[in-house]
Length: 207
Image (cartoon, rainbow, N blue to C red):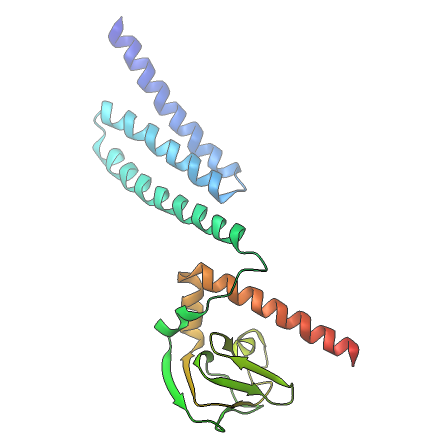
């Protein structure tokens, strides 16, 4: 009688795993989807271990590890987004690891209005001026990224170095990779682009 009861319990665990798996198809939240997949894997691991279904056990152990890591990433990203307020200081320094360093002398033009877009820039040292807009960009900021979001794919203004300057060039491919691999950088870029679009819209209305 005891073996029959144990058998029924393990079988119920197997059906519970199936229920968790089916429930994932109704989830709109990625976090809860991962939670249900993890619970399903745990139940399948118990079921397959007891009944010695080794292929199922192997795949569920692997899936458990992958989905646990993905859940950690989702929770970490959610916390990052929650804690990034308008008052927090943007950090673009990650671009140095992905970009090519260039040293430019004061007075030199980095690019001119109408030039084809090949990269965006992280300003590590110095000061640059966006001509025609009365805007200067200090060290620690990025510029030239707006062209990646513009279908015309050409520079909208001329940029000249006011001081001896060190920049890091990041092409579009590396820029996309950087945003994917560093969510904090991606959030900072998104906020910066939004602020610049709002500022440009305000200037257009005033004109």
